[in-house]
View 1 (spheres, rainbow, N blue to C red):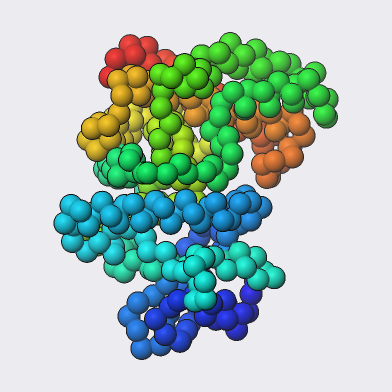
View 2 (view 1 turned 90 degrees about the vertical axis):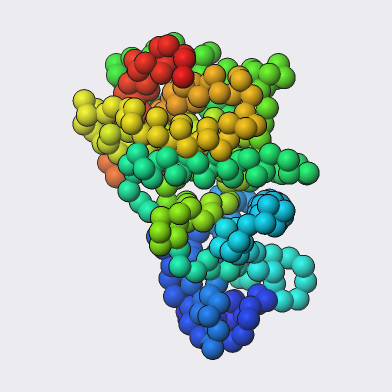
Length: 361
């Protein structure tokens, strides 16, 4: 970890409002190192982040995406006469000399935004927070539906189910650590294979010209929404994964964790269930803001999106288990297998639900 002196020096590379008074750790993010920067004699504060270059390997593309998105949203807010705009969209701070929004030194890549004052995040998932999250994510997509340029993928093929299916097949064929001989592994594989074609339909629909890609957040969590002190939504944050995707990414990925009755690695599989109250609240909020631009095929397939993401994550955990646990960190030898069981159970719960059986919303 950098010393205070180093962090002050790094913060000073950006076009800030004065001399740095303090740099303090901020938040509990798992990907980037984040700090709060205070300025001598100024109320404005900043957020300094070291970008995780191992995950986001093209920093220039990453920052370009964020600049385009925040600029476009700001333009929309101005056009509609919104008040308090600086609290409703992130403000990217450029470096002092040059037109870049990132700075590189021996410790890595750094960036800065203005800290949005008097804002809070929430961690509790309940119907109320799910509704507001759905509404905020839907509005975020709606604001970006007419972005005039094509954005890049900050994590290529992030939610490509066909790719995840191929990766599982490759893991099975290689059987790197001999786990294919386990009876449970064979049983899980047979079950996942049964739904492989159905779960890969998004990519097929896209190739057939029936399903569009849109600019999506791709990491829609309750704590990626900023609220004011009166619980009004201010804006969506954590924009690293904003990129072209199917809207299923935002809809299904939120529900995968938010609507599970237990954590994704809870070994008590009998307790796993899909929470319909969370689904209905999130869907209601999402469609209130995104319904204006979604196509019938997108709306029709929202139950598919809810099922897709636990299935996709089950495939990823399972492939990693077969490969010898080379990707996800584990706390014990069967951790990835337990995660797989959990996500399979959630997938089965969705398949049995009325939303999936009726296909009618």
